[in-house]
Image 1 (cartoon, rainbow, N blue to C red):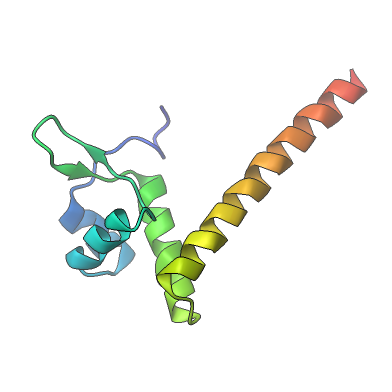
Image 2 (image 1 turned 180 degrees about the horizontal axis):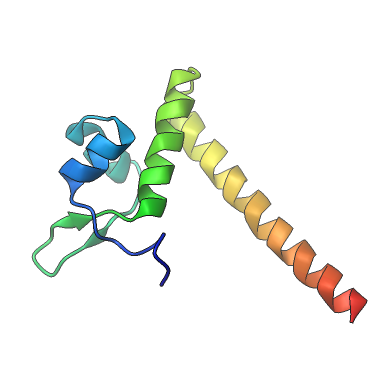
Length: 96
C-alpha cells in the first residue's frame, strides 16, 4: 500500500478536498464510480487516489457528462493505463 492508496480521510474531509457535497460522494459510491474503504464499523475512508478520482468526476460533470458517461470515461482511462503498463513491460522485456 502506498501513501496515495492508504484510506485515511473521512467522508467529510474527502468531500471538502474534492469541493463536493457529502451526499454526492454517497451517490457516486452507489453508482460504482468510487469505492472507499470501510472500517469494521462501516465508516467510509477515502484515500488520496479516491479524492483524485472524485476531482476527475467533478471535472467531467463540469464538462457536461452524465454519470453513465463518466463511468464509461473512467473505465476507458483505466484500460489505457493498464495497456500502457503492459506495453512498457513488453518493451523492457524486448530490450533485455
